[in-house]
Length: 300
Image 1 (tube, rainbow, N blue to C red):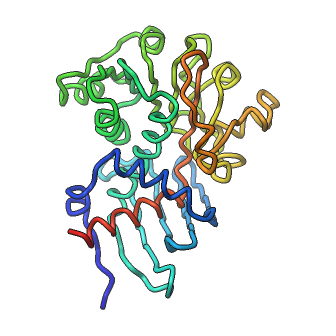
Image 2 (cartoon, rainbow, N blue to C red; image 1 turned 135 degrees about the vertical axis):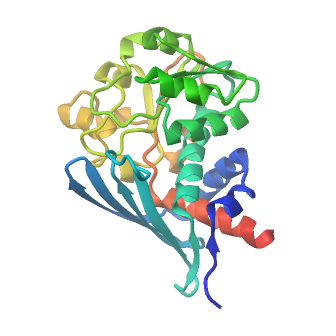
């Protein structure tokens, strides 16, 4: 029998944000993933191939093309293949955008819900595709929270905020950061926009945007002031500028990174410390997400 293709719409109808966040937590109770990443660059364009194998869950290969300059096509495209753990056969092809949307936002939601389970005001910095997914995911994880969006181009922030009755737009980034309980970054920048001097005890910072060695969203002081955690040491250290640049410069030491998801007990809520979570989005998370999607699709 040929492997099914699960489309975006078919998968979207079956999924719930908090359920997927829990599935990611459960996936880290399985044997540690074997992962392999390949990055190829052409100017600002990136070809990223990620593979993962988790004993008991199967294997996955995900390839993404990231072309920030696209105007007539989506800037991010790709393909995802899920393979049987028992036989190595192709089990499913799952829509790349479905997997990326749900994996990325649920990854950050899991970190936030562990480190800041209650929040009255959430700031999203950025107004692109990922920011829209974050608004959906965090809206499910924090019902009743007030959301604010800040974007360099105010019109894009206004367009995203207009979809929701409980979402407004900020024109002063520093003031918006200071007012928020959770700050989520969804920008592809090499020049940090988050200043550590803006932060106050008890806040949670959740960074998604940086995925290349030259990218970062938070400055050195933000990382030094916060307790820094990541989804995976293997996919952030040595690969993503948010973590690797300050490590290489000696701004922070390796032991400043408290834990990754294979030590979920270390993701403890605090009202007195600043916590910072870096979403690296490795293929093992795509694998956990795809296995969850396929299980839901088969059940339906």
